[in-house]
Image 1 (cartoon, rainbow, N blue to C red):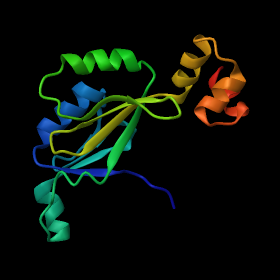
Image 2 (image 1 turned 90 degrees about the horizontal axis):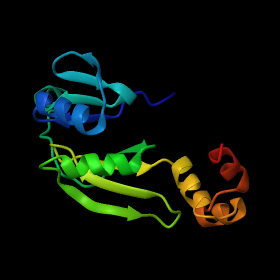
Image 3 (image 1 turned 135 degrees about the vertical axis):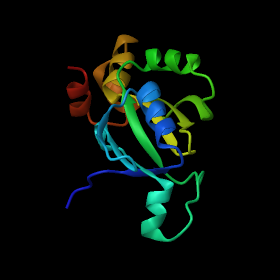
Image 4 (image 1 turned 30 degrees about the horizontal axis):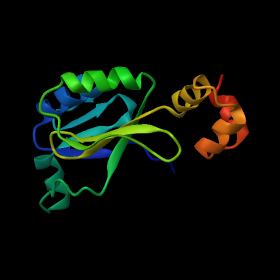
Amino acid sequence: MRIKNPLFVVKDMEKSKFFYRHVLGLRTVVDLGAHVVLTGGLALQTEESFVEFTQHAVTYRGNDKEIYFEEDNFDDFLKKMDSIEKIEYVHPVMEHEWGQRVIRFYDPDYHIIEVGESMKLVCHRFLDSGMTKEQVAERMGVPLKAVNIFAK
């Protein structure tokens, strides 16, 4: 068994497709109207269609799950985010204890989106600062073998 598509229920499909296209750069792979699959495998389904299956009302803004993306051009992404109006942030850029910078924000239906710099970028940032590979491994909490892979 393998996971195929995480799915978010959305109120306004066009608004959601616009958001994911313009904010995260995802493209539509399949568009069946009430059900859309985006690049990367994220699926969107209209609330009306989803309720037909569940027979229960949809609750938004549960703050209990997120979709995680990695960005190799994290600083450019942050500049892009600064230029987009009406983004509601869960929190500003933060740095995890292992050194990865991330930002979390809501999509139009208050699903949490996390975008982090790739671990390869974290490794290069530390190496570029003058740290040795051994120091980077310790700082990131990963084996030296992982640093050697990230450093390529």
